Length: 197
Ligand code: AMP
Image 1 (cartoon, rainbow, N blue to C red):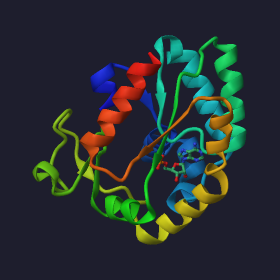
Image 2: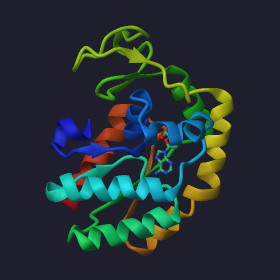
Image 3: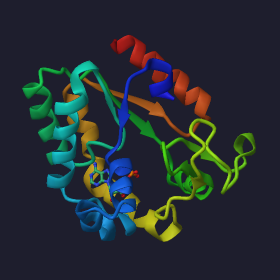
Image 4: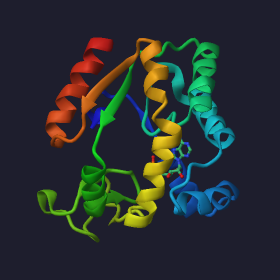
C-alpha cells in the first residue's frame, strides 16, 4: 500500500530470501533451513543484501519491511545510511498482539510473483485465486504455521524487541497500534510518512 500510495519502493529481506529459495540459488539453499523453522538468518547475509540494495536503488528513498531485526543490523544500517548520505526519517513500530498475529497468519495469502498480501475471505480472495495486480498465484507462506510462529515470536522477543530503545534514543521511533483494521493502521502510517517528508 505504501508503494502504491506514496510511490516509495518497499523492500523486505524476507521477500528477497523467498525468491532466492524459489529459484534454488546458493543463497536460497543456505537460508532455507533457518527460514523454514522461523529462525533469523545471519546478520552478515542480511546486511549484505541491504547494502547492495541501497547502493543500487537507494537514491530516491526507500522503506524497509522486516529490517532491521537485531541490534547489529540496526548499527550496520546507520553506517550504510551515512556512507550513502541518506538520513533516517522514521522507524515505525507496529504493536500487534500474539493472538492477532496468530489469527492473521492463519488467513494470510501472498502473491508468489509480486508479494501482494491479503487475507483469505477479504474481498472474496481464496487460495488459488489470482493476484489483482499481476495475475500471479495467491498462496500460503510455508512458515505461516502455528509451531513455526512460536519460534518467530521468541526470535522477536529475544533479538528484535531491543530495537525499540535503539530507535527511541535516535528520536526516530513512532509506535502505532497494529491490532486495528488495515485502513485505520494505513491512515496512521500515511500521516507519519507525510509528517516525516
Ligand atoms: P518475513 O517475510 O519478514 O516474515 O521474514 C521471513 C523469514 O526471513 C524470517 O523468519 C527469517 O528467517 C528471514 N528474515 C527476514 N528478514 C530478516 C532479518 N532482518 N534478519 C534475519 N532474518 C530475516
